[in-house]
Image (cartoon, rainbow, N blue to C red; front, side, top):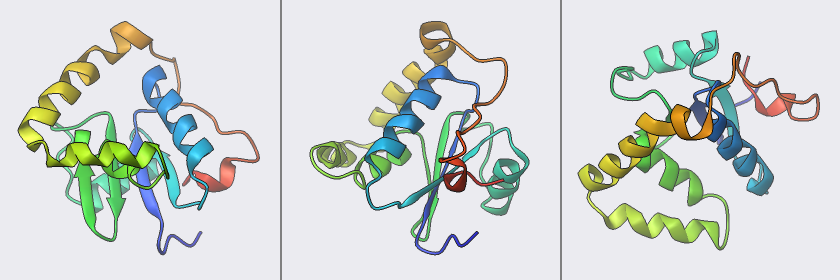
Length: 135
């Protein structure tokens, strides 16, 4: 699979909020910019290791692209910036200092299973979406 010029999103494959968010990204990824992998998958673990991501500092979303590795709210906002109008307007929140954004993000991330639930296993993409998932 060719990943040149693709943004890779690693996400918590058992989190209902994360899965719903990824489905939203897929729906609005009109330029086919993103590829996906579960954080729990072998490829996800390999990408985390290759990019020296401290897994104790994030367990919900990671964005990897040629610009670098982004975590937490920075990852979410950079993803939104690629989804076209009006979703890309959310990128304005990148001006808010990361320590503030990350606190809000961490609050939601720490409660995501309680509020949105958790699946027993990672989401399996449909056959038509399989090409967007790294394996």
